[in-house]
Length: 266
Length: 333
Image 1 (tube, each protein chain N blue to C red):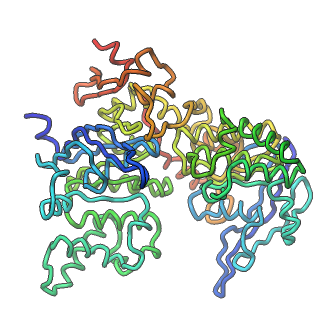
Image 2 (cartoon, one colour):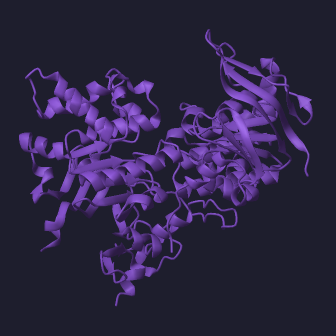
Image 3 (cartoon, chains in turn yellow, red):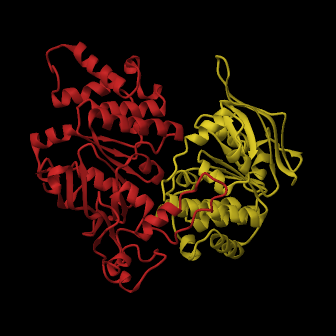
């Protein structure tokens, strides 16, 4: 078994409130292993997105209370309490892509501007080196004409193209971990296949482990290695993808599997 | 009996065109000549990728989008040329349900207020007689029809779950006693388990109340669960349509096949989805010939120059299975 890259022990996320604290994540523990694609599945409100956001240190501390026995990257505790230190981790060691790329891209800057700034800031490249690296990265996420994309603004691209740009930005620093929160939910099926295959391919090439949050069991079956099933803030089942589909242990998992609509074909 | 008589709605040669840009005379043709028929109590599933024109088509039927040409025959009268009270009474019988109920339901109105408004608007029941009780009863009955407790009538949309909100949106549509409901991506924002229950509800409404549906969705699996007839749309045209069983079992158009092959199957032993090359073309500059030819895995000579006409396939006795593709034009008969 390959070694864990990201280890989470007893993660608890609750909303700060005068009344009884409402737990969004209630004691979640798991390990993301080297080079794997680990799926987190569950229905809306099960805590899967809050788990991801808390790992990135993205939850505002005045509304959310995040506690954990350990959140370790390659065996070292993440500096969750230190925003300055977390900024170095974010993007470089752990990066994240979201459901709607439009909200994560700045509408007034070109793709080139946004992508090159990552190389200039985190990789100390000069303007020319950064442009070359950006062109190369765009090619790797499947753009046939990276130079045109470099000069485009986000609104000039389709949803699938924007999401591939997001992947190129998230993977630019070859992070240890990529957290992808419903990355294709807003996309069409044809584009979804394109985005997911590029993302998993790059993950393998760069040695980036992927935590893929999804509600789509078809995506789990086709693109992931292992699965965590979440329900009401807890992980109720951990399995390899094969085990999950052949021998689900929990009745909730079985119900979830039964609810998947299948395309009728001959 | 001719085909048009059996149909509740017959759309012929519908073209929807938007002005493109404030200062230019250019235009964007979102729907380029669509024919479709919806029989009484039928469920027509319209599928396609975002930007293919499926919502424009659905909304244009109610004159909510600029129609440049074509007809939409409703009880043998053209909906698209109706005005005033005639249009209003037709619209009472054709109701719309949208994708995001949180956006389509007013946040400031209680469920009851939302449900009563169409009754007032169309003057249904005892308008102005001060018998508020009967209105409330009608609203409660509509809630029960969609499987909600009438106790929810004093709630506001934000106090309901996504599934409950979409049921309220359906109840609002039902309260005018429609014959056809145009549902534009009604389950796309819901979890699969909630989706499944809304789909059951739609089938039940068709069964019990005899309502027909034009069901617009990008999700083939969802459409496959409820539609009798399926139309696959690409860049403003229906490239394939027929009985759902025929289209899913024997997809004829390469685009339909690509769409089906792109769905990830919830079975780890199944091969990974195939990837369709390229991006959908811009409707501002549609490709020549067959609009799909640049992405088609099996283009032949005429595809890039000649627009394919519609060919009927002889694979089903019940419903016409038609495809716009040169591969079928050339092998006809």
